[in-house]
Length: 119
Image (cartoon, rainbow, N blue to C red; front, side, top):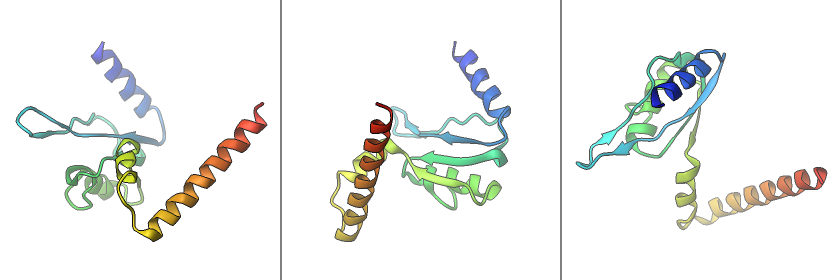
């Protein structure tokens, strides 16, 4: 089953002109970071990369982000939404909290308008 899923994912990525990918590392029982990436894809077609904040993932020079940026310099990188939630729960400086509050208001407004139009 896992081989079938892998073949489907590789086929879908290869048959697209552009794609975005979200990756995350895992740590084994010896606390060794493990990153498994399907290597048979054309990274120059990657338009978006979503990772966690670890240096092995988001590092501009030696992390996965840095390696992909050597191939696609203008790639759109974002921080994983799961990890963003833990960042948001921490205390923010006042000026960043204002920006976050405005973003939340904007998203809630868009959701309300979209919900109203689809009634």
